[in-house]
Image (tube, rainbow, N blue to C red; front, side, top):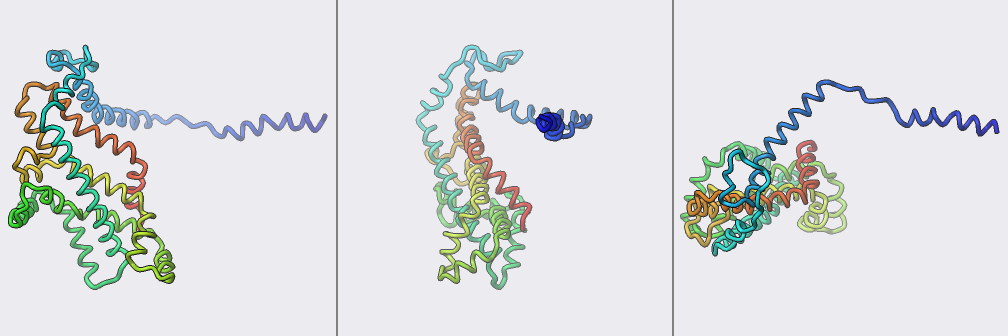
Length: 295
């Protein structure tokens, strides 16, 4: 009995210990959260308003004062956009461009990053510095030289002109280098002692360990190609070969006052990237964060 009473007396103490110290209120947290709230509203607000406006009719899309929710809701905007005979073709062209650039960039950037971070050869430091230097050059400066090369090779107005210049991005190479440096060299040494070649070690042992970095490079490559406008505008001339950003510009010229249709068409360019990011955001954030800290 005495033992039970002693245990009962000890329970409140244990409970208090489990709860731990209470958090003290800090006034500066209000300022921080207010800034975060303002940033969230200014970042997501235009997209949310555009998304709901894409379901408004032509008569109500420019209502003043503006309203968030459409009255009435209509799907005819999306039906009209998809009824355009070339719009599905633009979607397909953008997907081919983005998927091709993503696949080649992931492959060659991973191979280049592995070679620069794990292999010893003459001129490695010079190549590494040149890679860093290219990342500091604004893209508009190099776009003329790229166009002249593509034009001399007679590849303009083709998917090759779009994909080949994007198949090995310097930033992607740097990102993969930083991630490869975090891996222990004992993995490769053990594989080579077992008779594995360099390529087999790379594809079967090293690559499965860097999935977060590969995912980050894949998302960045796909997003860059999917939203690319300037390079596509320079090298493409046939409406049937237009990618979605170029097609939307052409579509805007044909429906420049029908804002409900323009907003519906822009959603095809925005929503796919949001879906891809939210599906793979864990790997993307892990890959970027780890590559920036390690090595």
